[in-house]
Length: 274
Ligand code: ADP
Image 1 (cartoon, rainbow, N blue to C red):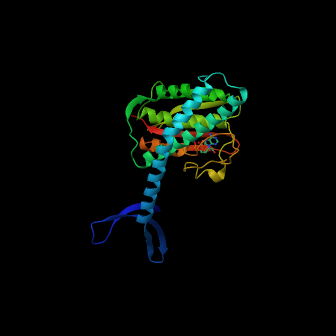
Image 2: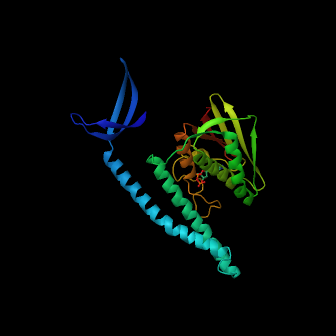
Image 3: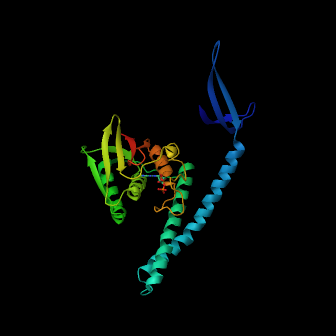
């Protein structure tokens, strides 16, 4: 067993962070628990400094980058007159890359806020059916660009849950954009809503390449990408699933996936029935 624990210094009213490894050892006259407690307060301080630095830099980068992105959009939209074909191509590449940078910065800021518990969650009682239909409609535009269709299946007439609708849509956008990116051209993604004991289960299934065995245990960790090469055809930051997991857990749910390499993936989450 492995966990983090805030311990109190003996004879002092002072708490510090520790990491505890505990294991059961069988001896001739019975079992004992052997625990190693390591002081990790220095590491925590360095982590906090690093997070603060990354967050400050990201904030500072976001404003000018948003302005650059906006201007590129206006020029490409014809605000500055008609562009020669080559300029149009070069500016399209610039805009695509500034989109990627903005996405990365927004993801880093989201992770930082979620981990610090500073992301506000506006929990509301809502019908999952309506939320799912809306997410599919919004994300179909991106899927269309990749010639992929999203279909919705359920036998339920209503499914009341308590979620933050904006954060919920963020999770759906991530799962649907991943499924679209990895689907074969012309394919169909299936979104399913079912009742599973005391939960509702939502799954997003595709017929893409699936997740290789080696990546299964680390897929939800930050910056994990199966193909992280610069030449990968799909964009992405490797932060989406990590953000999605934190959001779902904050809304009292669980998230996971089933996949066989070469046979597609099915990402699912459970949310408690109200
Ligand atoms: P991103 O998509 O931005 O790279 P994510 O955290 O959303 O980051 O996903 C991490 C990685 O998991 C992806 O880069 C990809 O390698 C893998 N992955 C996620 N969804 C799928 C899917 N539906 N099919 C195949 N691989 C996937």
